[in-house]
Length: 395
Image (cartoon, rainbow, N blue to C red):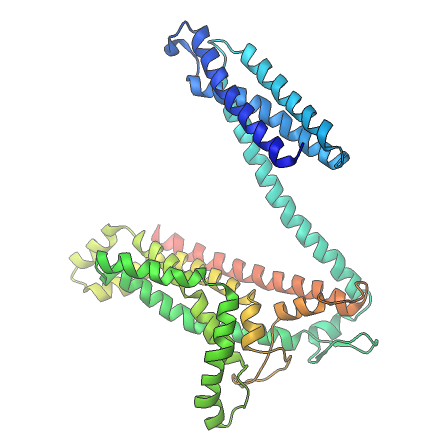
């Protein structure tokens, strides 16, 4: 029995158990549902879950222990589901606390989902820590974090200094935020405070379309359109470079990509500011612009900081736009019209191809990933401090 067929059969059985459990509950109450402890639907759900939950656990266990025994495995799972539902339906009485049992099962499921999320995060961190430890057992900690040259090779004389990659990551991200934050925030202020309902209904979805465009499309846009334009009209006339791949190219295109993260979230946050604050400010004689600047934006600042943080995290983790727009050169330079690269690009390049996984040139990818994780965590902590400070002032 194939897995899709097995799952479909389980759903059909659960549906049958739902109706049977509900009918059994009404029948035991003499047709008067008011005599039941729980509404009939809860009895139906309990019967369905009494079959699905044990069957699902049995399926996972048998798949892990004996993944190849499909036919007998399928019939055994169906048998567990049928027995569970029959026992639940036969035990149904008017005084059965079906609602409490269903809510208990749902609560257990929610706890399990939380544990899975936490365990997944812990597993990711621990795997990076282990592989990073392997890397630092072969390569100097100080050379990695304070080295200014990135030249990996498999001849034993690699230079794996992270500073050029970290500089490129921060440089491109700062340019992207310099584009996205003002444009996105001003667009949010206009749509929430000045625009008509009709214009807002059109403009907000139009801006959010930018978030749905694949990053490879943005990368091609940077490579074919933005990069050559910046080179021909700015870099070459100013004597700053001859390449279409540059920090400025990637930063501008990435900034366009993350505008919806700032605009849409900030718009929702500004709209959530109580109208009473605006009315009080206007009643004291402030103009609309003064109210926005001195009342609305400070009150919405914690949420706006969160939106900017989300945009920053998106920019730091971007890869495809950097590959096509900024190139792959690891260097320390202030010239925004030179090609540079980021940590994420080098993580991909070090793990791609036929490489020795135990070599430091490959294990360095995990050290880069852990460093990026720590940088992002630091941004989150900083944002929480800012949010807590202003939230206390406006609550």
